[in-house]
Image: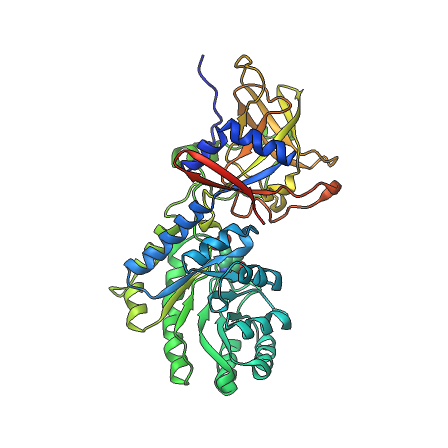
Length: 444
Ligand SMILES: *Cc1c(COP(=O)(O)O)cnc(C)c1O
């Protein structure tokens, strides 16, 4: 008999199938955890970060890779950033403190977000962190704090011309005022350049806006400001499934493939190219009148900063939910797992995480009778569903089996987690490998 497989198969780095097929490892963790948990693999994160850093070096561009911390709360990533002398982008005092506590020095911390509170600005000034200023009134508060505390390093965040309705960044008129204000502020403020963060995952708009800001840096320098860096933000693409799978599946998606005919506003593009560090290379190779962005930057002696979140976590984690029960509903089934859909954030954006979860069978052998099933959480809300899509399983899931969602470290794991029903948050289990041997510990 042909083995039934779901049409949207995840592409995984080698450690992931090795870990989820290691029943002894999973049994040990299940005995300690009793409930859902996440596996995280810092070595994959480190590889991703090193790949971005290597592109900067290979293109001869001075700069820094800031990990967009909000994409995952684990501390283990931060140790890798410290080891590789990377940087981190934060947006709150607790994030800032977490980063410092993991050995990253203040000058390697970037602070973004709208209307940052005074305590965060003060902490940034104390630790020589780099703050992306978003509005004129915030700039005034920052100057006041810098005046009382010591020098504050800032970038000015620009409103992207292609996204005039964004609530972030200075429009043209405010930017001109901000530059005048920075020039007047004197030594307490170091205006180090400009920043932006774009929606979407395209190369061209990032390269174009960066090139425009080189010109802005020149003008700012003519007013006596240092202006020696441009941050192009995050939004580096990831591919979760293979191109053929995604093309076929995306074209065929329709309501009858989802439990209760559920429909969604949109889905993440689960296949894209270029991704990650290759996308950075393409941005730097983009040519303007025959000159690449890389050469324009180095000629103008401007550093390039970037703030990838999701792309550094690509392939670096998975989420595991014990099966609590299974029942038939019509021609398909419904699996109920221990845990909640809040531990898989995509549902909370009126969307769904489409790469198919894996079934890890832990009971005695049973006949292969493929079945389609949706996957619900163990709360009493009708809408607490992890996967509305009817996933093809090789056999009906049973109590005690495990459902494994692949590649969840970027935003899925903990962005929307809650202790609804007073259930504990799923712990993050840090996995490391020596040859084929896995060891594990709970992330602090
Ligand atoms: C969220 C965010 C990022 C990270 O975005 P990714 O899509 O995860 O790469 C970077 N910079 C800023 C300002 C952000 O708000």
